Length: 286
Length: 344
Ligand SMILES: Cc1cc2nc3c(=O)[nH]c(=O)nc-3n(C[C@H](O)[C@H](O)[C@H](O)COP(=O)(O)OP(=O)(O)OC[C@H]3O[C@@H](n4cnc5c(N)ncnc54)[C@H](O)[C@@H]3O)c2cc1C
Ligand code: SF4
Ligand code: SF4
Ligand code: FES
Image 1 (cartoon, rainbow over the protein chains, first blue to last red):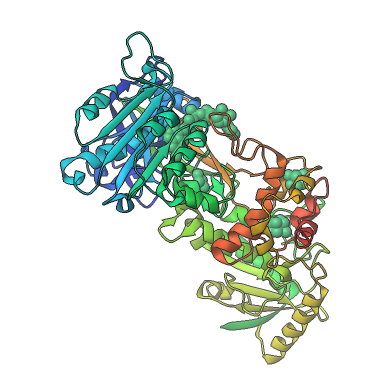
Image 2: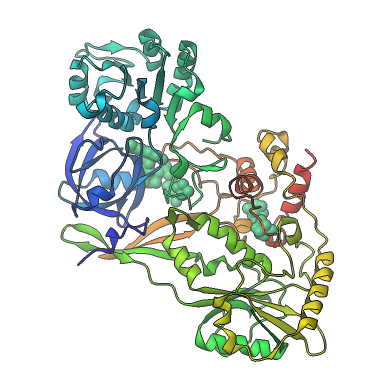
């Protein structure tokens, strides 16, 4: 039986997927990465995405949650999301097992402005679990086919403590690369932690990436953004060259339900990615 | 374009015949109210009505609508198909409400992202508009927002019926589109001549003059663009109960929620009307709420209708039906608020 959920002309019908793998990311166990395989192989092409976009994870009977895409389109055959347990839908998801089926609507929203980043140095700054779509961007930029299109890549990534760092295997692999300047930091280390300690803004100040032909892509909790922005302004980055992703409560994800309306934009459709220059033009309601 | 003259009784009879053949939604008497609802076969349409208490958006964007069905399978719960196909429908509305459909089109029928449910209803809906030679309420202000009580050739209307008055009441029915002409067989009457046109034009002049509320709906755009943080906003919502009535009865408000309902092995995903006037509308999982008080929510309602929609579509997001003015339990009046904004 062909499921009508495969019909592309209905943006409300989720694409059927199967949970291929679940990775528990953090010591507290409340953040997991879910790897989904498409039930119908032709759906992979339909789900062609760009880093920075999101999907609505759909658990029938529970509801939907907007979640940023954590994998990169250069990783074939599946798509990944890293999800924190927060409420009804995300808790139900955390209770699911490999092999079970659910749905994804998407890809939704705009994306990190890849064309704008091309030929420039890119500084990625992430805090907490907002690092997910930045991971997608980084993995996209560093594959051999793409690496030459971007200049120097600097990454500053912080978590509250070592147990809360996501993607630990990848952090190690990125750290070994000579073409990625990676700085991982924790607010407070523990006995096993040999890396850097300190807050993200302080580390950014320390690393002091040049603003010359550079773009900063910044994502994290509001408080981190508030203290990190001045650091980049001081380094000479303009508002046009600092880019972020907004979070709003969402339902439809396609600019109809009115929930994520900020100024004359809908975050789900016109965002979630905005430069700080664009945010200045919106009404400050996010 | 075909034009016919019918007596008022013949027009009502035509609607009754139509209701026997198709799904017709229009003004029906319900106790003390005239509401927009199904005109059941054999039932007289309430043609003497002023305007229905509820807006007709229900026809295109139902209060609750099934988006999809799902069912339990050995692999877990899976999608089992989309909601029901919409029925052929004729709606009988006032010109302001017909204009509200054009605003809903902007949201639900965007190039590149058409809402299949809305578009499905829209394509199967024929709009019969009853002009307003006697504007029904003191709260009406359609002429301030690009509307017309007796429009010449309104966009989005398939059949326009104008009561020309006279002895038994004479109705001029203009069949403006192919969809409208498809209904010709139901409306028996004589061909209308130029004299009927002249009487309609006269009725229009009188009707327009009869609309006394003037609201600077277009003029406030630059003021709203500059005064997002003005102290004015802190003073206007004090009485508001956050009941959402103003948005539920508004023909242009379109916010919705999506929720799942399951019973044993089967379930449905529904969308239902929601309101930016509700405190939890924008509350995020983290607890953060970008519009945390009624001040922000009232400002959003005004900004959306009189700034964001004009910015995006060069239209005002209000059709001047006056429903929110008449039905707010604490008498908050959007006309007055827009007038006051103009004085900021
Ligand atoms: C673009 C975008 C990207 C995101 N990316 C990620 C990501 O990569 N990883 C991640 O973990 N999270 C991400 N989030 C956040 C994520 O969407 C939320 O944590 C998630 O939706 C919570 O869903 P839930 O069903 O578990 O919570 P819910 O059960 O919906 O509860 C969430 C909160 O909403 C409120 N609420 C519940 N029901 C209602 C109601 N009917 N009306 C009003 N308020 C209600 C409650 O106050 C509750 O605290 C992202 C969000 C956006 C917008
Ligand atoms: S109808 Fe009146 S009281 Fe109710 S939400 Fe609207 S403005 Fe507030
Ligand atoms: S805002 Fe009020 S007057 Fe304007 S269309 Fe909505 S209900 Fe009618
Ligand atoms: S989530 Fe519905 S409009 Fe953005």
